[in-house]
Length: 82
Image 1: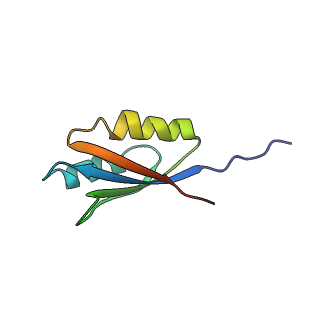
Image 2: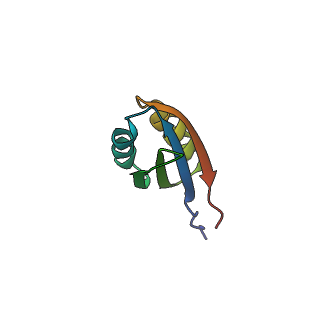
Image 3: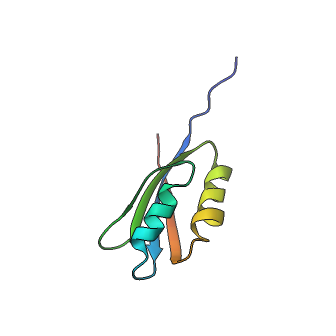
């Protein structure tokens, strides 16, 4: 019997350069696996929520896709407990 794996769920806090929050939030929101992405007041500048199939996919999403966006200074990723 094959067991269905649960998705890896994570909140991604994104710190960006001044004036880039809305653009970064839109770009992140269009990425596969990202269910919600919003610019917000205060720290961090953007909060995103993602559900992906593995930690490897989460690593790729954060370190290859999000961190490489213009204006992104750093990210803090928090994997949600089920």
